Length: 193
Image (tube, rainbow, N blue to C red; front, top):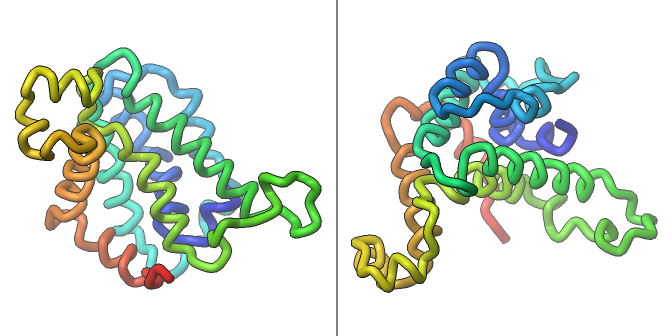
């Protein structure tokens, strides 16, 4: 959890599956393994949310994560389980970078790459990890282009699957039922330098 404590929304995302969210999410996605779910819901600091991260915001995060999970297709690799592993890895990387001593000998941890200066980067990293393969059909961009798939026309043969994932993620986020979540994100927004 450590790194997520510095930004309200990424802090809430891993906990979105806690309590009532875990069973409904597992059944909604057909994902039976709970080991990753159990890992991301373990946090000693769970009750230390900023006042603006209300119960309503936390509930909307749970609902948003479950909704995004439902958009992941049943394909061999680009599944919600994969997205959860990527989210965990991104969170661990963020934690290591945020907590590394400036005197560390590890060259990879010597710099925080701007993460300490702007917590909006935390949100971007965790959000990207969650949604990076949403609605991925299990075939490559090139295959879609070669087959003249409607996505290749819509996105002009440029990063079709990546653009589709972002379109789904932001279209869902802009639904009226996520208004409190958006307010929580934007209230803590810092302009990117």
